[in-house]
Amino acid sequence: MHNDHKSLLQARLQELEPDWLEIIDESHLHAGHAGARGGASHFRVQIWCDAFAGLGTVARHRLVYARVQDLMPYPIHALAIEARDPF
Image 1 (cartoon, rainbow, N blue to C red):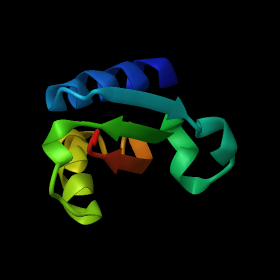
Image 2: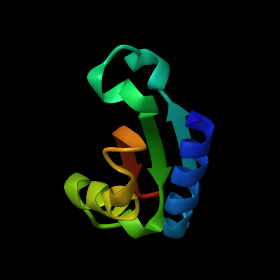
Image 3: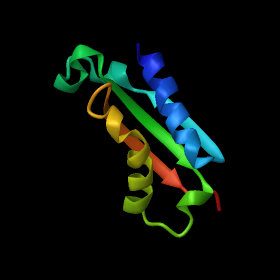
C-alpha cells in the first residue's frame, strides 16, 4: 500500500520538474503511532528544483504541500521536506 502512496506522491511532485527527487518511505519508523493507523504513510522528500530559486524555506514547503494537500492527512499522514534550489 505504501508503494502506491509513494508513486502518487512522486507523480504529484514531478509537476515541479525537479532536478533531483528522492522519496523515502519512513512509515516503518512510525509503527504504532496514531497517525499510522489505517495504513497512513510517512515520507521524507528531498527535492531540488528551479521553482525554489529565490524562495525561503516556508515558501518552498508551501509549493510542495500545494501539490499534495488533498492526500493529507490520509493516505499520507506526515511529510518531512528537504527543498532546495539546484544552485
